[in-house]
Length: 344
Image: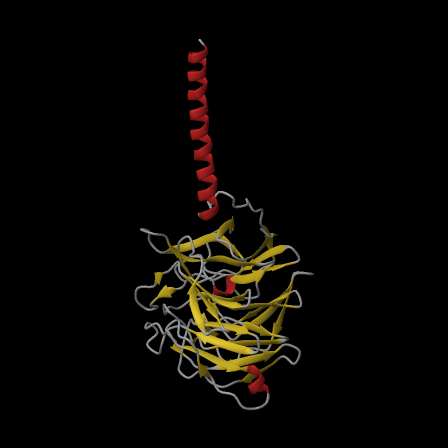
């Protein structure tokens, strides 16, 4: 009996050990490959509409206000109109129009000056440009800066220290991806003389990727190959180290992704990416409702979903609230709705 009991107990112990090992493996794998089950069920509130529906607008936060520059309006027309949203009273205030009707550019903040470069001018079938501008918030005035060495649209702009970096994007034909990476020293520019210089090229050229400075390095997130033809969304993330002038691979996205430039930002030690276009492995290109986040040294996590799938919305977190404005629901439509929820 004792032998039979021991055998029975031994069998139970073995089965228990097997279950424990399986659980441990699941936990371990879960830490390496995070599941998408942890996303919060966000409760969204509708705010007053934007003065004009926009998608592909340049977006930046300053003084706890959201700046919206340019972008597409109804009919896929580029706009010069720019506005500021103040969440304290949900008000919209117009600012000086852009010098050109531009889309496909992202904004960089240097103190109280907003920078943008390149883009598409004059509508969906418009042309790539080499224009570089700064906007002085306090003076409500734009100033032209040295042109990019070549025309580009849908590239990435980032600031590291006192140097402005422009990389990638499509060339003059609006379809050939460029690996070019140029740098403008803002201290030299302030002294009255500066030109763009070359830096290490992008290892995998593409366009309409999200671009932020995070933990002292530039992150080129997702993006697509080609613009007027295939538009193949990519999951890759490339990280540029300005100290070594070199690129390395970062944590890949869980799917191919693009068109979230105005919805990608850094807050609270994480990169957030809101909406966009996506092409899952083996799937077809579609508009995306997901809100993803990446902590320092971590992996991408699904932290919430939009009220509906949106391409190229504007988004920001201010005072613990996530604001999302504009965007396209697909097929070049445009919306003016604005939503807010507790930041995930």
